[in-house]
Amino acid sequence: MIDFGYKISRNLNKLHSLKVGVSSPQITDDGVHRFAYEIGHYLTNLKHLKVGFESCKGLSEAGIIALTCKISRQMPNLEKLELGLSWSPQITNDTVKRIQDEICYHMKKLTSLTLDIRRCPNIGDESLNILANQLTKRLYNLNALKLKFGSPWITDKGLIKFGQSLFNNLNEVKHLELTFWHCRGLTDEGIQDFADLIKSINNLDHLLIDLFGCQSLSIQAKKTLERSMEHIPKSLFRS
Image 1 (cartoon, rainbow, N blue to C red):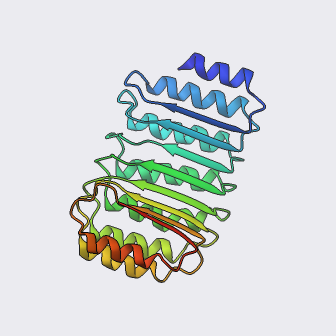
Image 2: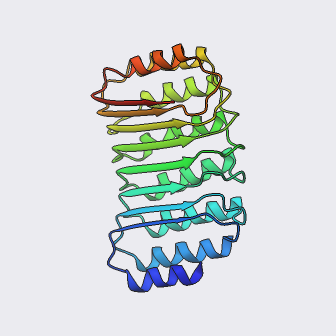
């Protein structure tokens, strides 16, 4: 991992875009720290960074937070950030708050943000509330936002509060993608209320909603949600 970061940093220092994906239990905090330092210190021309550390059991919660800190503080000029942390049981609601705070405080030039925390069983409604309340308010230039969740602890109450906060503060966001995988805490009642909130959106050009694996939902509820998106120029519903 350290050698990989070293080679990237020294040999590709003119890059504008970098995509790195790793999935291994052998990835550790030390390796990720060195990787983040190297790319932040040497790849000063980067505008787009996509990093994925998925199913990395050797990476602790502290390691994930440190990774975000190094990226956000050493790369404040990034315009597009994609952070993939799916299948990470070490991530909690507190982790999500720390990640958000780092990004919002240091990365004011972001125009596109993707945060993938699917299959993270220790997050819940609080994570939805954290992200909905702050991201679009503090990242003034953001025009594309992709949030990917997946936890049995996400409920109707959390979804509705999330929608109320986010949809009323989209600001410059024109492209929105929301994923809720295997959220068995979501019911037809919650989805129908969420659909009503979507009808009030009037400034999006693109909306994608993905409810894959939400087995508690009926076909009728899914159809209601899909119909609620019809007024948006480019909309796509998946389940």
